[in-house]
Length: 272
Ligand SMILES: C[S@@+](CC[C@H](N)C(=O)[O-])C[C@H]1O[C@@H](n2cnc3c(N)ncnc32)[C@H](O)[C@@H]1O
Image (cartoon, rainbow, N blue to C red; front, top):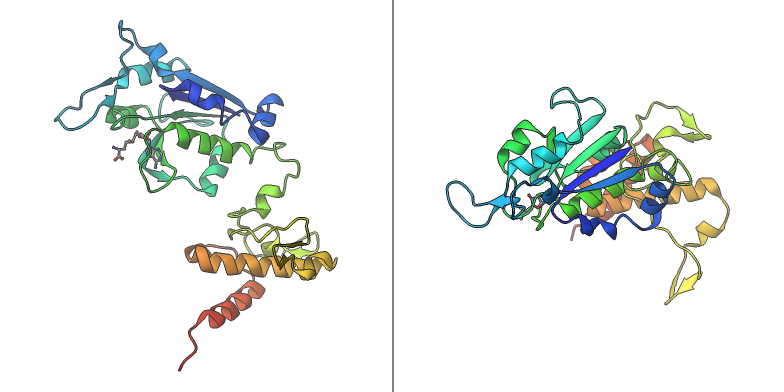
């Protein structure tokens, strides 16, 4: 897979993409990331990438011409004719970036991310060049670069061969939800194989006791089914507490439903 990151600050990416999983994935040729300096696609003496907004108001707006020139230099199919390629604009007004969107992007051959700055980007970029706008959250950043780094990171770890264990990403928070069809994987009901859209369970490592808090005994007991049930319960508990809206779309087995009912009862205020 390949990412092309269009930015006025190409140096920004030298840090975030050069560590850990991302670095190894690049070194092993599993992903290629190219940064494109928007100023290289300007043709005036001052290498102008921005201009004042029509209609007045604060700030500057990134011009359409250099962005079109940068993307057109990649010779991708035109908007509307792309299959394995996407051109996406980072924008607080965009479609929310979630693990499901990361999975969609991981299935593509090439993703071009356009990083806005200032007050934003001339609207014709979105209208005529992009396949969509994408937001990394409901807040306003100063530029699209941090968002682009977030997207590259989240997508790359889903690419085949990037994580040591190909199932790791399924067991994490928001892991792919499977339909509860009664099927079993490794003898475990499929809906409990992977997180099924829930938040992750707690993890512990040595020392066994730290500042008066011990690792739950069951985790050292070797009873794999008890450990699986404990982890699932903790996932449900945390999702109910921190992100209850995820439960509506999570893949829940009858066992999950009864644990959840129990957790909800326990959370109800005791009548006087
Ligand atoms: C200061 S912001 C512009 C905000 C814009 N005027 C608005 O109110 O939506 C500059 C650039 O940062 C990027 N950006 C800001 N917030 C973002 C978010 N939540 N997700 C993705 N990109 C974002 C976009 O590329 C945007 O063009």
